[in-house]
Amino acid sequence: MKVHFLDLIPDRRKNRSDSGRKQGMNPPRLLLEAFLILIFIGACLLKLPFASVEALTWMEAAFTATSAVTVTGLVVVDTSSQFSVFGQLVILCLIQLGGLGLMTFAVLTALALGFKLRLKHQLAAQEAFNEISLQTARRAGGFIALFALTAEAFGIIMLAIFFVPELGWERGLYEALFYTVSAFNNAGFALSSDSLSAYVSHPGISLSVTALFITGGLGYIVIMEVINQRRWSRFSVYVKVILLATLLLNLTATLAILLLEFDNPATLGGLDSLWDKLLAAWFQGVTPRTAGFNTLDIGALTAGTSVLMLMLMFIGGAPNSTASGIKISTFVILLSATRSFLRGNKNVSFYRRSLSSDTVLKALATATIGMAVIFIAVLTLSILVKDDFLNIAFEAVSAFGTVGLSRGTTGELGTAGQLVIMAVMLIGRLGPLTLGYTLTVRRRSHVRYANTEFPVG
Image (spheres, rainbow, N blue to C red):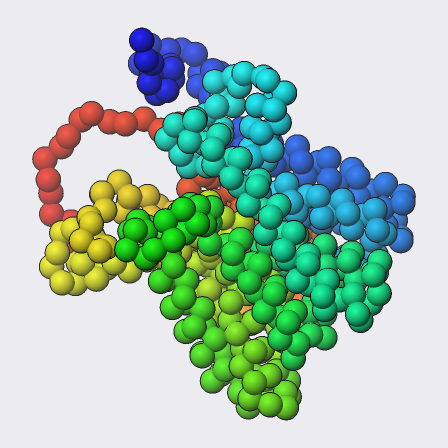
């Protein structure tokens, strides 16, 4: 007799008094605890004397570990000059674990060793992959690991072609490894204090790095379907929407930055040729969702460009990817819902397929929680940190989107400000909706009330 996976979940109506078990069965809470444990381990490793050139404080170690695990890239200690090779490799491992997801490694390790997963770990695996069946989650986990290693191998080869002739075999391969893992996982950690600004006119490095973090930010569902189906006509509605939205956002952002910064002598205006300006505009247009590298001085960008990047960082990448933010799917759903309302349509649809009301409400909840988190963070930082409002808002949104770009505020945060940014980075990586699940126990009400009129707008 076949037993559906959902039948294994205890009925809360039969176990109302067993509150401890209900909390233990909360998959998002398990993921949160796993991330916190990884951050703690990472901070302890970075605090070791041989992990850094100069001794780190516990706050510096914890902030760096949090930034690495959440694949953000905001730093209070320069990665290249203050960390030893051991410390840099610890950061690299934290990036890999945080980017691909702890559950990928946990599930694959358990299955490889022949262990049977406990129910709460099965639920956590499902939550991590956003899949309905455990069997599908297992396949997804295997594909994620295989694809990630393959993509990173190609990335190392591509970057080594350019780094090795300049830096030599040992240093060239090391930097190719570091930048590949950091880029594919949308982390933004760099081995130079000015990120990749030295390669602003280098097409090989700029295009290779952007290819890596765009691929990582598309999401594994999209990658799997593109590889398996290969034809546009066979793609699902979701994949078509994600690919089109990604293309439009990237092209729009590139064109906008090209126009806004064209005559700015501190950014594009300081470059010689139109090709160099276009290449730099492309790199800086696609990196806010949510890679964190930069080839232009972020602090020198015009106010218009900075506001544009705030929107891009808030949107982020695709679901089930190494990127964060509210996700492209959420953004597109909200735009489509608004369009449907203005046209007088009750259904939200893409490619002649309607979305359920639950999906629309989930998108609305995700965006609302995300905006609330950012508002609280900006308000708190405005009290704690003495800096320009735009710089503070940029820092908060960058942390939420786990982007890692900064207008110079990171070094001025202080202990209290760093704690705020650490919390926002963690929330951004787990996802705002996961935060909502973590803080509350969902109970579906079976009571329906009479409709009432309620003015809006």
